[in-house]
Image (cartoon, rainbow, N blue to C red; front, side, top):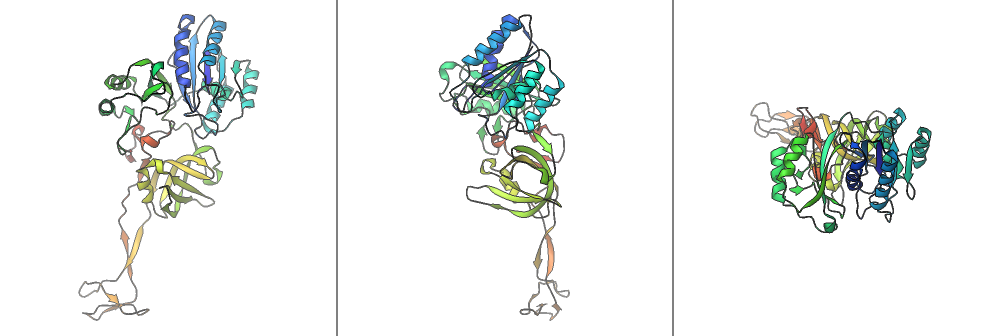
Length: 415
């Protein structure tokens, strides 16, 4: 049996992954959990998401399916914040995964789906499901059940004791930096070096104490053993699609739609400019279309890279489109345009710079009396290299693939 759960948290608290952690404990007498639980991030552009837009799937070998469904339903009822405006829990249980369910997952990561689509597929498959309020969580629950992860990473999450929920987290920052030093690059996005911030712990009132992400479970364990913090209630290792770019679609600029994430190719057509608030914008175009690209203030030092772009630079850009603007997650500088400036010509006899002879009269060397008709142009060096650049960990989306996972030599990780 595969159980999918989604949309149980709210902006104020609780957490779908915590619900799953409790459910796993409660299901132990009823069967044997198969493999690791899956933490599945869905379309980060979804307008009705609460926080991280995460759904959970558990696989259980059991001979008592009715009891499993009852325990799962009771747990969802108990640990969902039904008072949340955008909290609409969904619970799904299936015996096997169909191709239509797998396709539904791929669409849920990249598109905006309707609740009725999920209901119709569940009914056509004869799948057991329950929902609350609007039932939007059925979308994520079904997607989590159908999730295939050809590329995956891990996250080890520690949860707080209930008596501490809502209070400031007690984590020794020095131990977090040491954990990162010992395990990077097998773990990543624990700290933000450029902005000197610890980023692996949330600031909301939810039950998560911290989460360590990476490619190697043993490295996650090593990092976990370094952390000095308040006592934790429980911990779970998840397999996840985080850090994989599963949300990114390859497309032409003219095909880009709102609420979806893309990889687009084009040339800079307008020099980057900053507006009040520190946001930086430029225009990217190809032969038939253009789009505004933005590095918003939270991307911090990434904006410095964007400001170095120049009209004519050839780029690939990745990010989410909202209101016709691409919110940049990373860029690949493919080719740098020549940038030049006019300068006075050099006297061929003495090697000194000539001076203007007057408006419309060209240039002359006062010493040698030589003349030239116009200024020459010199190519300026570019303070930018080709290759990949990314936003810092403090601004990274869960699904965005960090450059530390790239084997390319022309990647410039944010640290």
